[in-house]
Length: 418
Image (cartoon, rainbow, N blue to C red; front, side, top):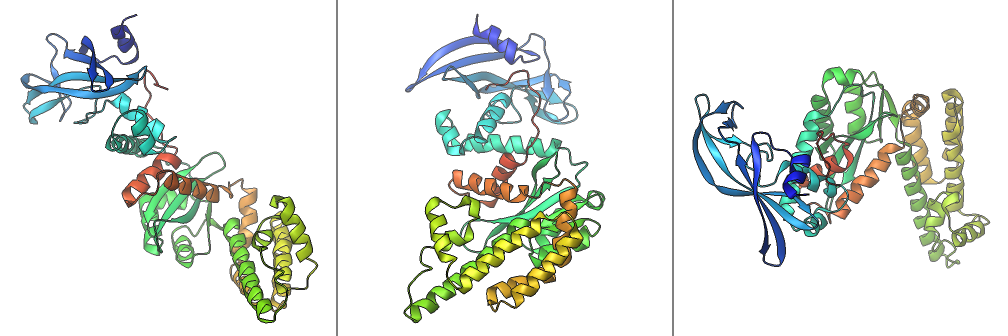
């Protein structure tokens, strides 16, 4: 079977035919060069208006990179024509295998973009013997097409969170769709401010915002204010992960304070090496940590009492009725306020202040909203940046996040190259 037959089967070019094919040696690489020529008497298509126009002249022959065959680099060779268009003037023709002035064929763009979702961009460039810039260009084109063609109708639940970017207090705000049947990244915004989140609702539109039934976020005050203003009809749910994370920080603060107090009194350092025993869920402890925790629970320490309060609070999430969950919450806060453990008392005050939003969790639970997916997406977002060894540019980070987490659509093609 000839290569022309394969190409006509998987990548037919309307108005053009494949010409001479040469296997060449370029440095230490074997390269397949495939000439393309226009059909006889075929008029070129104006890149401005898309109409067929008479020719004006031809440009020098150009190379267009195509997905490799059997590890052999493949290039299309074609001399682009210019057309004399009465509407647009003299314009370079539009060709079916490459967008605009790109040196990459459309097939190669999607080929690289799909691999860039699985590997780091640097690895993709090295494996397929292309440049890092070509990989970035491919991802940009894939993301732009996906964002333009994605469906934003029927979104009823969103999750709002942020991840750190670079060093210092630099953040990126992320908004996810968390409906039970569709989970994806919707929007990326720079910084973590009320203005940032207002930018999302402006982009999302009043009509879609009015259709939201559930909004999940942490307890960041600017978020709470904007959500109440722009999606007040939605059930606002506080993210369980952040609540338990704050409780873990409170326990860690109690432990650190008590370690210093025991050391100052010259007592045995029983809390040394117990941090993860106290922060982990009991079912996730190692055998060694289980033994250490069992020994620790026999001691009369503020840290132990704080840990028991945290574990007791886990029962809150098991309730079905918001009414009974509210009674449990009130009793837990009352007991914690009497504990004389300041970080835990601060936690109880915070939970009391957000009581209504906390109880909304049970309405969302019954509404089949994927509440745990926000933190899962955040972990994937961190892996995306880590796999790329950190994106110094916000625009590249935004591009990578959309590409990896956006579940963006792709055009239908006659052939997929992997």
